[in-house]
Image (cartoon, rainbow, N blue to C red):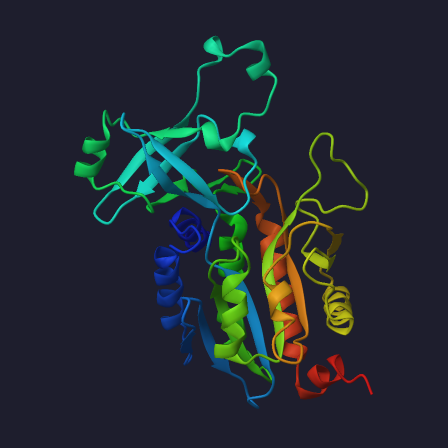
Length: 357
């Protein structure tokens, strides 16, 4: 099924412009072997609802459709594009990278430009080049030419990076693994769980606009009314030079369970149930604590009176740049773990998650 992950990562879907990815998700949900009812909210999130044997608790498995990217913010008289970020970017990863500008009628390739190093002053060489001084060159010679081509302020800008599996046959390199990986896992868990008996109703799919403020995660629960929620997302792999740590997440060492981030402390009983299941199934796992950043679980857990939620995913290198990496084995183990956990979440288990009296 790596062909599906390839298609998902190469689809163009920055925050607010997720329609290409949504169409793939809709196609895959409609092609499930058993009956899956499509569910959406008014922001564009999409899920498939699959009833189990008892129609028990409603279990939400959510990736997010959007990737980090940019938007055209200004067109100069000489034919260059200024841009603003959609999601979090570190400006040093941008220069000389290729991008696509998607208009109503066609797509244009451009490069993020700046001054050549030959003309930089010593002071400029030693400072981080700010994004506000960067521009995109699409080969136009004037603003009138850009107008003729149909490029305008508000058009989305998408990083370019083709999907590739590296020679170890495990490392996946692609753009938008944050979070097409989560979209892929949600679909695959649903695909596997529909062939087995499960004591609940599974809601599998993806939200919109996670990268700009967890916005789809705020609206989707009102359309889905879940009893338990899993945000399936990437974690930060800290296994490169200068980041080695015995306790931080690493690629290839199993799914990552987030104990803390800037948006949430998870439901402890749900967290422990996932750990117990991983150990019972013989699935290696890792834990992470992160003071910055967050996932859709940061909104899910605040739904109505409170929703037992957990962020779970795989370790990834180089996210929020033009390219990223994950381990294929980690992704497969994450699918196994979520299938096993979902099968355990019956009415009694779910009641116990919030039975504080």
